[in-house]
Length: 299
Image (tube, rainbow, N blue to C red):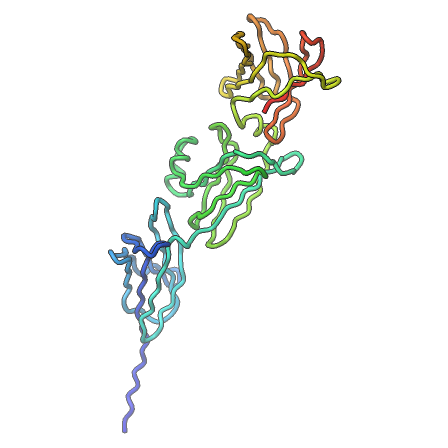
């Protein structure tokens, strides 16, 4: 008898797109590639389905682009077409995320900058990013904002895979920007070296006066000072006083961190910021009332 043999070289490929709760993802753009050549582009239907129909058996790549719960996703996924079968894939869009862990260090000592409350954002590097100007526009584009903990670590979680610009800013002024890469189920470790003194000094505009002591013997100095407030844009500062006494206006010089206060338009004393660490500033100056050098501690 004659034997007829039919070689089946084709199979079918179906994708179903869902979120972490199993809800169907509609209107997602899915592009099919083989050997880096684009073959077809489809949009997922109301059941999250993308049906590429009959294809020659072999490996393929799909690129998925969509938005889920306010976050933009764009990733690729390898798929396989099997001869004589329908290969079905369910893809959880929200599983294509990773983490970014940023550790700050002093660029002088290389020690960890253990300062909490420092703020950073991640912005997807796309056309919108490159057209944006200024911090406010970058913040508007970002869905990922984090602050440092007590150990100076900033952690971004559930970040869709892709390339981002990490933007670190203090009091609405951009300090550093870096490109970071987020991979599925991976943690991207970044170490950022900054001028720790400068960052701590600018981390807040109002500093409360914790103590005033003589530098010679640490004995307390009587005072009516409450706080120092800084205007970083104009490089001015105000020494706040208690008991209804008038505030004292002054200026500071960013280049070498010197403060200069005035009473009745005349310079009365000037000072240098001696140190800044773990959310604390120390200022030393000559106090005419105490007839001594005095250290003012701010926090």
